[in-house]
Image (tube, rainbow, N blue to C red; front, top):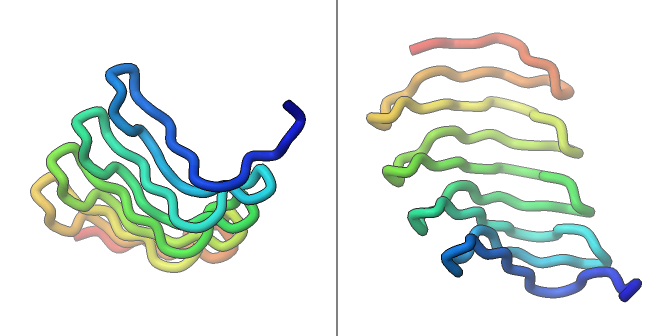
Length: 107
């Protein structure tokens, strides 16, 4: 219809459960967005600004445990990114500078 998306937006899996939800402003994703797994549990949560991933994000496994955390600045990975094993224990930490992978510390 030629109009840009604005307001609350939800997408759904074939079974009718929510696959993601968040807001649009002038056709771009904005604010907090949540993504879900088919089992209904949270898959990822983070913010968008002007349609770009920004700030801290978290990703989760099907068992509900944290899988990864990290931050974005203008769509690029920045700062410390942390990954966790399936049992929830720390796997590794990677430093990103201007989107480039730097030092990795494995546990």
